[in-house]
Length: 140
Image 1 (tube, rainbow, N blue to C red):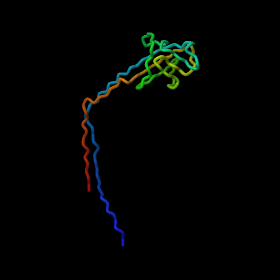
Image 2 (image 1 turned 45 degrees about the horizontal axis):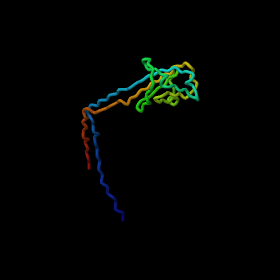
Image 3 (image 1 turned 90 degrees about the horizontal axis):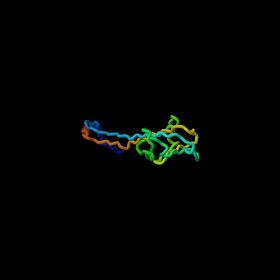
Image 4 (image 1 turned 120 degrees about the vertical axis):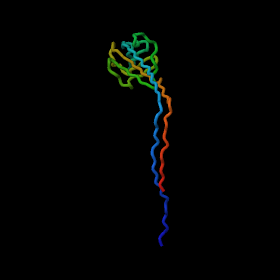
């Protein structure tokens, strides 16, 4: 005698993916970009690092500054020494100074600090999209 066989329910189905159409997204990006220039002096090179105080920099207009921007959370900063971009891990920025982890910068070399902050970015859906309902066919 043969054991009873198990009969399983079989269902096949096909479906189409929902489609979104229409809709309007408005994105506003208002970056704040700052550039500063300093000239390295001998007192800046000490203790294994080169520290340029905020007061050592001038802005794009040539005006002296007293405070540097804070490092941006949503942005980046670039440091150029004598026209060459430096690796990010060689520098640290505070509102009081820029520290470059080397003493191999010659006195008189120009240092350019560029800070780009993209935190003033907004995105809104002004017209919601229309999303279709998927077609599902079940075949028994």
